[in-house]
Amino acid sequence: MASEKVETVVAGNYVEMEREGGDGERGVGAAGTSSGGRSKLVSNLFWHGGSAYDAWFSCSSNQVAQVLLTLPYSFSQLGMASGIAFQLFYGLMGSWTAYLISVLYVEYRTRKEREKVDFRNHVIQWFEVLHGLLGSHWRNVGLFFNCTFLLFGSVIQLIACASNIYYINDSLDKRTWTYIFGACCATTVFIPSFHNYRMWSFLGLLMTTYTAWYLTVAAIVHGKVEGVTHSAPTKMVLYFTGATNILYTFGGHAVTVEIMHAMWKPQKFKLIYLMATLYVLTLTLPSASAMYWAFGDALLDHSNAFSLLPRTHFRDAAVVLMLIHQFITFGFACTPLYFVWEKAIGVHSEKTTVLRRAAARLPVVAPIWFLAVVFPFFGPINSTVGSLLVSFTVYIIPAAAHMAVFASPAAREGAVERPPRWLGGWAGMYALNCFVAAWVLVVGFGFGGWASTVNFVRQVNTFGLFTKCYQCPPRH
Image 1 (cartoon, rainbow, N blue to C red):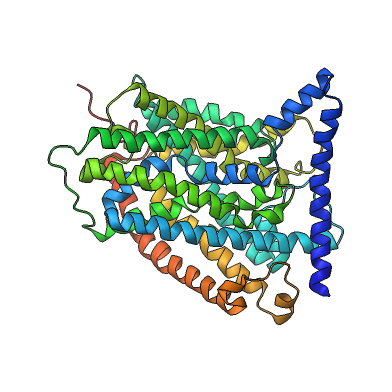
Image 2 (image 1 turned 90 degrees about the horizontal axis):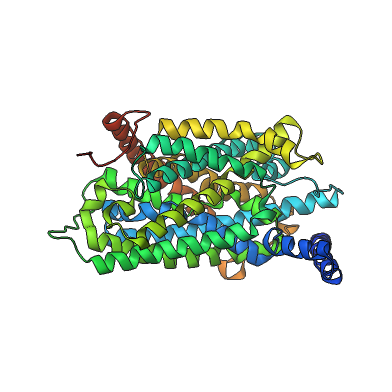
């Protein structure tokens, strides 16, 4: 009876949320003859999203961005077989922990709504889920890792913008381009929430789809370079650095809770991330494999795949599309930071103007801008962030938190979402969670942290901090 009551509460509230969105759309249809009605219809079509399709586009678009250009570099460190295997393995593992996060979100929201808590002017975030279910210590740990990861995730997007634009306009160095794109990406402060990424998520996925298939076709048409070698794996440092970049690739669900909260029916999220991952694999596997087949070990010194392909109109188009997509992904990574900052200064739940909210958010962009100038190491920074931050944020903490929340028989009995039968019930779920946490702790954080840190320090020693143009070819 307890579980039935919980399900009734959840269904009642989520259906009500969806009905509110649907009523808005039906009202638009009734007033469609007026200019105001048409304006609202266009706004709903391009701006206000909350369906399962919107969530799928958001997850797919956010999961693969600039990392698409560094995966061939990872293949040159891992070798073809290990590169493919790690993509499949971490893709499935990432989908599993995204599912765990969705379960914990629904559990938290259900308990709070039974207490009559109103979330209409409040965006639930991951650290709040941990706080509500497990207490302040879990909240502090989750807040630290999540915010630090999202901070450096935003930094990586800025670095990628400067790295990419250089291949179609080298009149300015990469550091100067970082200043310019930092100002451009700061405009994301005007986008209120993940509800408003409907058009951007759709366009972003089209852009990465074009870029992935451009890399694949261009590499095949180009063919193997003369004397190409495929010697990977050769060194443990390179091997685990490449593996942690793939760990980073499929660890994009640090914004899962915010995407779920933007849905009209969050309980539909359960398989969305898996579906997004399967689509992303159709982009990452062919492009990385084709590039490594064509260029082999030459990729070890070219962390950006664009750098090895001849300049054509198709390549220029791919660069421009990736720049736009990186702006979108910057917004994805930064929006949760905006929410945290709003809550810290007390403006999050206020009904305020867009300009006032944007002004309140601007201080978040400044440290991101600064760090992108300090550490412009496109490629190696991905692996470092993957091993030290992603490993905990989106793999270890969700697995450990799920086990802690449902440790008692009473919690398991009253759980809103029970384990899938094919997994073997709670015992099977606990076994899988233990495996995920142990594997990522040892291989991702342990070996990966060692390898990526060694590689990152090597970049600092070779190029220096604040380097003006990382991996730029010498001018003649």
